Amino acid sequence: MSFFSKPDETLPPANAPLSRDRIEAILTSKGWNYGIDDDGDLGGSWDGNVFYFFVMGTKDEILQVRGRWSRTLSAADQAQVALLANEVNQSKIWPKVYSRVEGDQLGVYAEVSTDLEFGVADDQLGQLVECGLFSGLQFFEQLDERFPAPDAGPADANVYVEDRPL
Image 1 (spheres, rainbow, N blue to C red):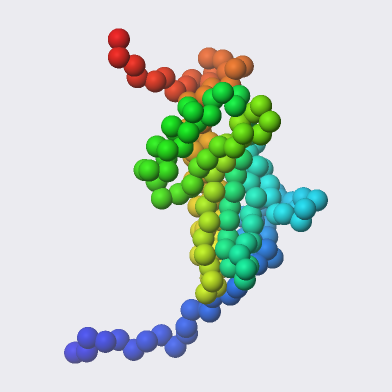
Image 2: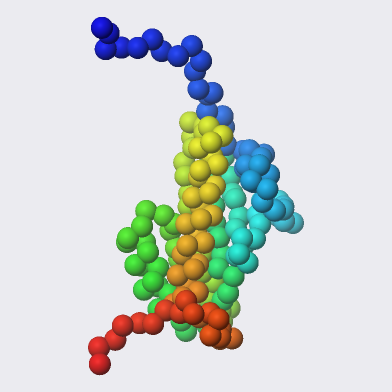
């Protein structure tokens, strides 16, 4: 009896370099709508939130999936958003979340960045794209609960209520 088995004759495909074309192929294979903006950036809208897929780094080796929450808040809400962002950033590996003052408004973002210097398999790239999208969308749902839209009615029952001592 042998403790070693004969290796498969077929090897898994080699990792290929990251490219925008490969990201587009993933989005197309999922049937997701996307486009290229005037700056040449690849992006789309998921649940009303805009996400971009960037190929970055000196060797185009970094994939970044960056989403922006569909709503803006008053810049005065920055401290409350920072508390929520800090909770998320401490308790989760991804996404990295942050806010940015844009005029008198506050934009809120979620990002997942991955160094793929040694290439990436197609299925792995698909998982990374999905991770960036879905973890960002989960955070944006938390924002919707914590900061309900002013026009939210009874149908929007998923409203955050802060526990406060009486």
